Length: 400
Image (tube, rainbow, N blue to C red):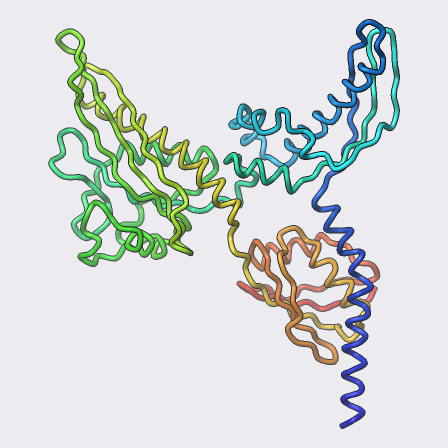
C-alpha cells in the first residue's frame, strides 16, 4: 500500500514539475497569439532639407500601415468593404493604442523623400476589441442564428399579422423581408419562418402579435435560434399630399434582440422610413421595407458588438488520451491543445497509468477541435484521433 502511495506521489510531482517547465513556453505562445509582427516600407516627404522630420513622418506612416495591414488580416474581405468608413473611424488617429513596439530595420534618405523599413508589433486583442465594439464583423462563423418574431400591420389591416401561434396569419411581411435580407448580407444565419410554422408550439399563450421576452425565448429555443428579434412594424398614411395623387406613407419598426441562452436583451431600436407614391400598396410596401432595412443595419451593428464582447460560452469537450504513461509526451500534447485558437480552458479530470482525461473549453465543436489538432505538429509524437462524437474525443499518442 505504501509503495502504491509513493508511486502516485512521484507521478503527481512529475506532472507538476513538467507543468512548471512548460509555463514559460505557454506565456510566450500566448503573447505570440495576442500580437502580430509585420514589416512595412513607408515614405516621408523632405521639406526645406529637414530630413529628421521626414524620417519621423516615414516612421509614423509605417506604423499606420502596419495597423491597417493587421486589421485587414483579421477581417473577411466583405466585412472590410461593407464597414470601410467605420473601419477608418476606428483606426484613424489611434495608432499608438495598437503598437506594442517597433524598430527601424533600414532607411534610405534622398533629396525629396525619406524611406524606411519598419518592423512593428501590433496588439491584436486591443484591435479586436475596438473593431467588435464598433459592430464590425470579425468572423462570420461567430455570428448567432436569428429568428424574427415581428408582427406587421399594413394600412389596410384591422389587426397586426404574424406567423406564430395556432391562429397565425402567414402573409408576406415587408419589414421582416428587409430585415432578413439586410442581416443575411452582413453574414447572419436567419431562420426562415416560412418553413417552420408546423414545428412551433400552439399553446394559446402564443396567439398574440406582441410576445414578451420569456415567450419569445421559448419559441426561439424550440427552433434552435440563438437570438430572437421581437417587436412590431406598422405602416400609416400621412396627411402630407402633393397634387391630387401623390401621398405620403410612414413605416415604423420597433424591435429588440434577446439571447436565448441567457434571456438577456442585447439590442433595441426604433426606425422610421417615409416614402411617397401614387399607389397606396407600393407606398405602404416601400415605407415598411425602408424601415426594416434601417432596423436591420442598426440591429446587426448592436448584436455584433454585444455578441463578440460577451462571446458564446465555450463547449466543454472531453478528451481521453491513451499513451499518457509517457509524461513528457502528455505535457507536449497539453501544450499544443492549449495553444489552439479557440481553446479557453484546459483542466485535467482524471489520470491512470496509461490514460488521461482532460476537459477542454473550446469555441467550436469536437470535430472542429479534432480538425485543428490534425494540423498541428508535435515534436516526436504522432496522434491518432480514432473517435469523435458531439463533445468527446478519443486520442492515442504515438511515439515518433
